[in-house]
Length: 157
Length: 400
Image 1 (cartoon, rainbow over the protein chains, first blue to last red):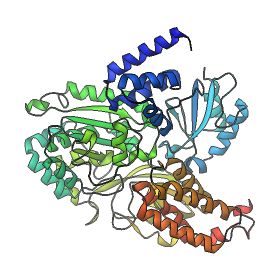
Image 2: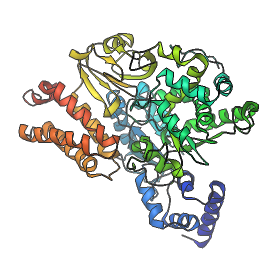
Image 3: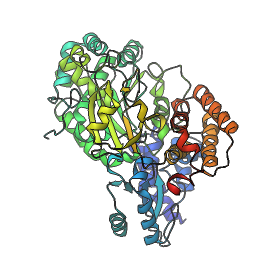
Image 4: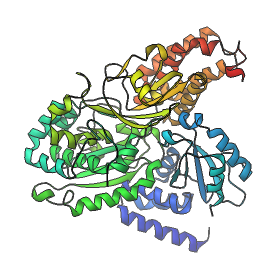
């Protein structure tokens, strides 16, 4: 990581700490914003958050490792999360999954070579009456068909 | 916004701001009285009396108290809070204001699950409107000694954070691991201060109770389960969705209502709930019989119940937070047992041991997750043993 990039990240984290307050209870909102902007929370970012909140870096890592949506490593620009819980499962999530895998040439848990899209499964997203459903970044799509799902994913930049 | 839904309590007519206004007129004591009179119990599933929770928090001495709205709706098959937050935010937020007034809190926090991040903007806009209407902020509706405001905090994808002490840990910036109880949040909650944690639907019932009276609320439902319940109905039926029905509704009547045909099983209470076979469809939905936080999943004759069970157990293996042994290891062992049945590599003596393990988990797990995750394992194996243990003789379910 370049020094300039590091400085920019530090500045950004200082801004977040100022916005949410330098207390432990601000940890999740800070990590969530970092995750949203950078699609992961790098080890340097973790150390800076720890320093500014005056906690041990391992505490930050421990929290990141606990929550499904916080990631210590870069996984891709867009995260596509397909619901795999039973209501979406019986509504046909398998055919959506296969269509996406075929189209993108990757399996679930993997990222496309250009780093654009990561596919992953997620537990119940609360769209059980409109399954199959998926969340792309923070947008939810329901009543999917294989064709519709592929169309949504192919529009991602 | 014109409301399209109809129902006896939650979806009945309500004028914005009325609940808060009436509560401030009644005073704290009378608000508590009405809530107690109504018999309202926690709608998340556990069914703890709301008035007791509020009274204990109101009685706790502290300079700061908190009202937390549990919008971490993660139970598979539940989506009623999604509907409430998107279509009836006034009920939920006013319920929080009334709770804050009653217990003496100045701060309300909505813990919104990460999967619902797409709602955050519209909810924040609504809160801003409430501030303009003086339903939030300083000196609410001209009442000089009552300030209250609400912030929204997001979860980050962890089912266990729906457990109230895990939720508080998460708010404090920690891993969402459940605490030992006691002490309870009513005296040692968020930041160690007295905290009321209520489900979205519980809070949404409050403005109705305050405006129409506890006596009116009690007219709906059964003696032990007063009022109505929002049911999130999904699976094999013609009209899935959110329905408001009085407590005490028969399962068979509910199935007719939603157009469910050839139903084999109904999972009541989500993945952590119980599986009810056709022979018991005359049971009623109520705290005293088939209790539920509202999740109803319908399975017709074509479904493979072992597949359903496996899906649930995979869910629990992933979502167990791992801090206590019965839940961390127990769920893995139950899932392995299911895979053995799938591959026809089981013995009945081992299945019997697993059932004993399931009972142990119910007693020995630290929080509600591990205490209830064996429910589908026990009820599906018991109620569908013919189908499950004969599957391999038939070449697997549906010949697969």
